[in-house]
Amino acid sequence: MASDVHAGLAVETLSVTYRDPIRPHRALSGVSFFVDAGRTLAIVGPSGAGKTTLLRAIAGLLEPQNGEIVLGGDSLRGRATRDRRIALVFQDDALFPTMSVRENLRFALRRGARGSHVEDAARALHVESHLDRRPRDLSGGERQRVALARALLSEPRALLLDEPLAHLDPALRATVRAGLRDLRERFEGPVLYVTHDHAEAMQIGDSLGVLIDGRLEDIGEPQRVYDAPANTRVAAFLGVPAMNLIDDGARIVGIRPEYVCVSHGEGGVVERRDSAGADAYVHVRTQRGTIVARVPANAAFGGGDPVSLEFPAQHVRYFNAATGEAM
Image (cartoon, rainbow, N blue to C red; front, side, top):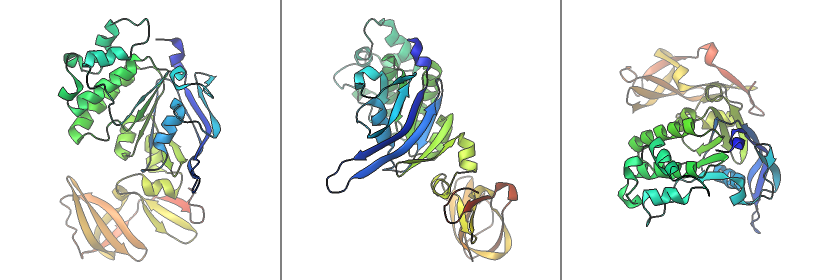
């Protein structure tokens, strides 16, 4: 594999506007980040946040109005998609249906590559026993593993993954997620992974970015972004349920449901209880609005019960009420 695969990917103040004559739409606004070689940046955001637009701009499938994309120290401005050596894997595996798995993989080989690379990539993604089968004979998880192997065989300098697990059921998601870990061990370049799934992003990314309405609102180590979000926009999006945000005058108090301590007493009334396997979430009506708390499944709190809530100081976050930014 070429040595330039060891260099990182830098995106600098990237902006994309769709030129609709009636209603122009700013899809990305000043997005900047860096992904080092051998690292994965997971970007999470709601539908319409600009995640796929970001990947398409980096891959060269659309031209940004402003900003710079630099890979391995080389600017990609004006460079054709085929010359960027960036692999993009979509939600749909996009395999050729009339070709066998082996033929699909061979199609991705760069000129001069050895045929044995196909078997190597298939073993790395655990699809070596399916080489002579066609895509229609594979499960969704197996097809997605083949798509990842094909991306690897193209010897890309960077790898972009557009919600590759979105259409898979939970069991297959776990299987393909294991394949992504195998891919990470084999691929030495930067990986950009976008998803709407919060838990998936935190599991896959070495770092985590939150994209909302075309703006990268926060980026950093996944647990830090979760525990101490940069603003109320991130706090209100990241997590299921999201962080409780309580208006306290000049500031907003934030506390994650798992850190809210509930006991029988006064101060609030349980509106409803949602079961979630080993846990349950109780929605408590208070004078400052509804607050959600995570409790054990066997906790004796039900609708109409009077309860008392406590917030451990080390888990409380404060935000400016006017700007929403963390204090």
